[in-house]
Length: 151
Image (cartoon, rainbow, N blue to C red; front, side, top):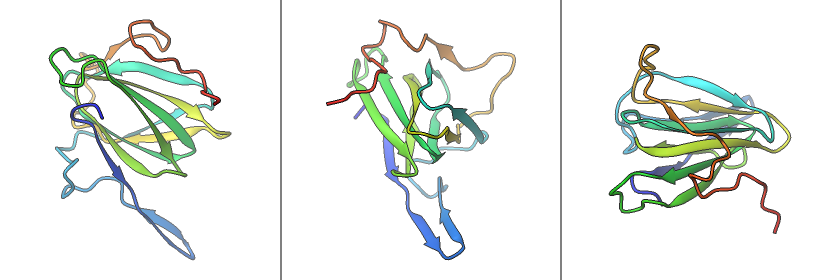
């Protein structure tokens, strides 16, 4: 696992009306501070990536559909520099994924439906100077191929 990344299996609490699922609590070890909450959608088969933050920590929860979230540790001096991690988040695998600053990340919608990811970053989005640094989704600077792996 990439240094600083944390995963928490989330628990669905169902009843005859539907279900409840806690996504992030201030008494969990993954919690640092609150910046804002937003939702991002990705269509099936589409890749959104790559980007990283210098200051912000992200907390991803896929609340609808399924998404493959991929992380790459390009941080110089990190004990896991060069490592790639894949996570499959969503309705079949509810989890919280904590992504620390400096870790490159992207995601792909998998399955039949659009995937909806809720993010609870530690910082407010700064419209004048965004803490966002990007690479194309398909780049040879990151050792990862977004193609489905049929094996």
